[in-house]
Image 1 (tube, one colour):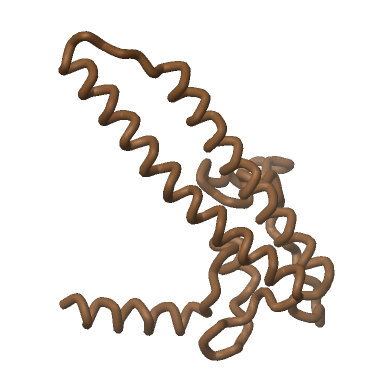
Image 2 (cartoon, helix red, strand yellow):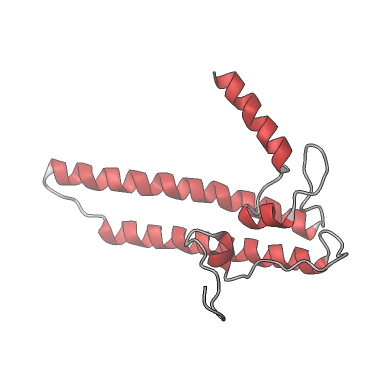
Length: 151
């Protein structure tokens, strides 16, 4: 990488979406201090606002594209497209609720700790998945249990 260039980030990276650089921890810094909480609040609010904008665009798009096609095949294709869009928006709506729940935890200064064992989740894990409520060990155990129950 050439000097002065930023490392490339995935287009799906939450940090890239929020336009935020990774948090630079300082030696001896307290976990989930005011600066870290503000960092995650900015990420979560930007992500939530982007999802809300996407939902609004979908509604507008569906209103603009709604047509009563005389051909049953054309009508079926349009209905299937709308159905897929609505399923995606429903997933996004659930994610918005989860983001809002996480923002409340940030405001209550109860953010960044595992709901199962109480240890620190970690800055990097939270930057990758800001709505994470389990540390990596507890999440791995939960996934293993889930896999055993399914299998």
